[in-house]
Length: 487
Image (cartoon, rainbow, N blue to C red; front, side):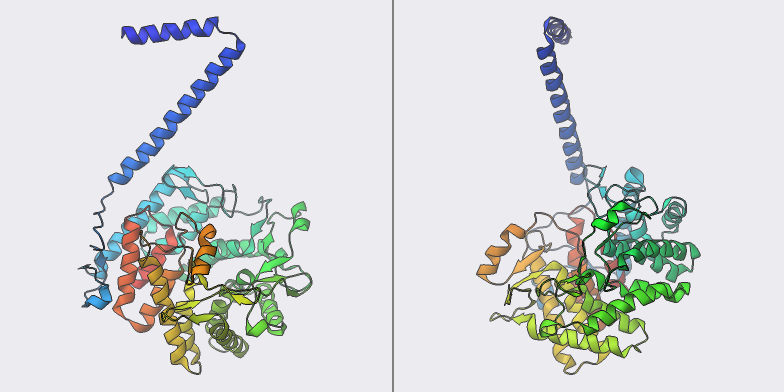
């Protein structure tokens, strides 16, 4: 007690006898010390919370995970890992609990914002929608909440959307693709599941804000759009768009025209399809970037992109009546298999990147949807030599699974390479975090539904287990797991 009294009196003496420069130094030192204490407290609190998570430790290569079904799995299926088998219903309960944990923490701490930083418990303002409170997590969670039967949480989300969601005041350039996939698509999904007109009205609101992006000489939309009407930022937007982004708009806009009766949305994406059908394609491939002003490819670099996936799904969406879509898809998938698919001497199959006339012999995590695409495309369109396409798809799934399995954390890297030269090239591109991409889970889901081979459920359970050992993921991961657990 006397020591504390002495310290306080000494500090008072130093303060009253100090000059202005010394006082500034004392204040700065105090603020710095307080900041260090606060940051240390936050980090220690997060570490303590993580240490008390009820997750059993992973021992070596043994996964004491819960597999979804009582299928008998041999040593080859399990790749040397012992697994505790439980019923799919028990797994659903666990995943539902994970979803509630993630959603409730978001709702309690940063409700109405776009993204949540769970460790520091702060709002993430560096995302695609900047600092505008568009409730991206609320909207993206809608279909997952509905499928899981979480009506209380879904009703709260609906009330927020009805009262607070609007793009009218957003005076910033936002991605057309992100607006479509993360805001428009969930609204349309909920309308299709519930028939609630609120979701259709909000979908029309979002689509109307996107339509100005299509006002280009070619009809191909710009990459970015400013939702606020009359914004001066519009004239500064680039005319270069990514093929993977404008090529993936067809499903949402086509469906919106069907349910609303307004043909303008369907007409805009049909115009994209007509432009692509007439465009010269190197080796039958669709390059990555297109100039919407001059109507030509920005370069001839090619990768596996979502345009091919959308071509197949839009053909299915048409009731398999759109012959032009089917033909474009078949030609595109053939071009990919001939020019981008590589089988190396180790019998590893991967989809490469074509740049400046050469293959880079590396694959991105975002390309892993190709495994499901090849299998689904072969089955739905009855491609000639369909069995070869199915084999490519299965082999791509194996490659993507191995990228996870060969990682120390069992979480896949953003980019993985297949030659010594390409491994050196990708070192600066690697990230020290997992980017929450859904493509591998998507391929597991498609192959499980198409083949019912138990290994795809097993791989899904391994992915789930790795998430049990990590901070909880965002909602689309649960989307894949919930469907993989279904019959």
